[in-house]
Length: 60
Image (cartoon, rainbow, N blue to C red; front, side, top):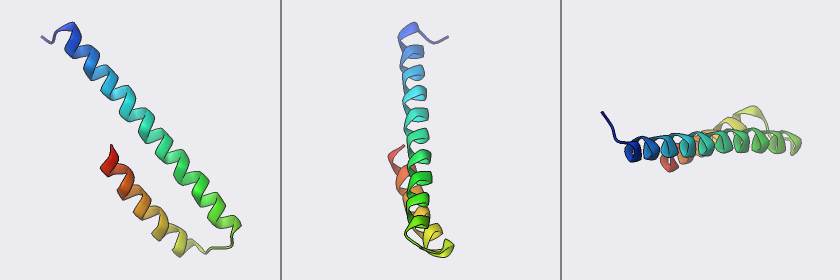
C-alpha cells in the first residue's frame, strides 16, 4: 500500500502531465490554423506538426 504522500505525488504528476499534454494539443491546433491562414498546404503542415509532436513528447 502506498502512503498518503506517495499518492499525492502521483496525483500531482498525473495532473501536471495531463495539463501539459492538453496545452500541447491546443498549441498544435492553433499552429495548424495559423499555417492554413498563411496558405501552406497540408504536406508542409503535417511535417511541421510531426516535429512539434515529437518535441512535446520529449517534454512530457
